Image (cartoon, rainbow, N blue to C red; front, side, top):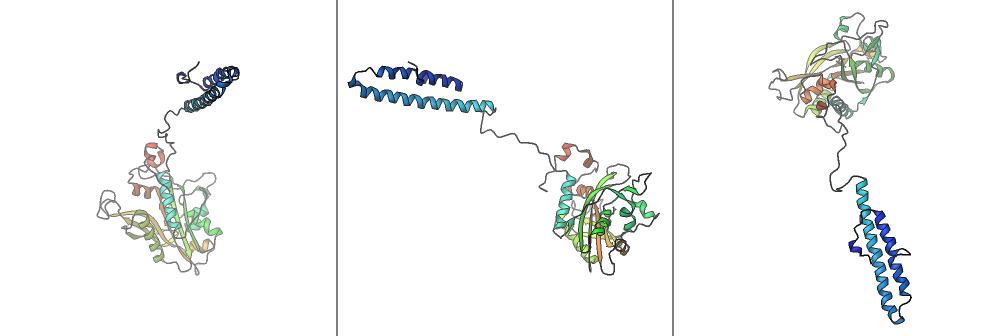
Length: 333
Ligand code: DAH
């Protein structure tokens, strides 16, 4: 008779064949049952118990074999030979550093009640220049090397996100508090510090009694949130057609803390944005009564902020999409 201990099946089919051989209708145990019918009555009780015990033990052992084989076969099918081995991580990529910094800036201003506004990249003269107080033929237009389309000179690629200010004022009445991220285009030679495509963020705040002090405080809050609590700011007088007065904002150098180093070229300060009180001409051109309302605006280059934050020395790296560069940035934002 077959000994279960000696049976070493390799597949579930082998176990099944073995079960039939042993427990099937014409199997070995079945044959014993047949023989049992003809044993002497005085032996029936004892033999019957033994036979039943044999039958249930065999069934249980076969069930155990079937279970063990099943696990083995499943593992082989799914190529998992060691269930405790750590899995292979899926590479899901990382966010682009420009997106990370953009999201951080948007998040900081959203805490001050700003909402995000958007506008088209392909613009017209009115939204990029005229409504922002650039007079026709005024040399101020040369401040930004615009991409025009020759046959339709009124169609331009926006040179700054200030055009979104105009779009916002067109269909929103004060109070207005918007932050406008976007891509801008300028006809500039590509170098480590300039590119013909880059990103800006524009801010606009219009309400009754908005003052220069409100602007300064908002920008100081922003600078501290982005570069750290120890950050100081300073404003230098400047000129933009759409603001009066206008200023350029510097932050204390986050590398040397203001003592002077290579990054800040020994000055202790880094320029981060332009700003100013919205020119009354701009308010009027956009249907807002300048005797009732005032406001401030500011604009900054995202690449520049990201370069300062991450200590990246060449702006072109942001556009090459070399994964060895991009892999180094990781953020929940
Ligand atoms: N649009 C300006 C530029 O591209 C940046 C800027 C300066 C925006 C002053 C502003 C501002 O809103 O008030 O250089």
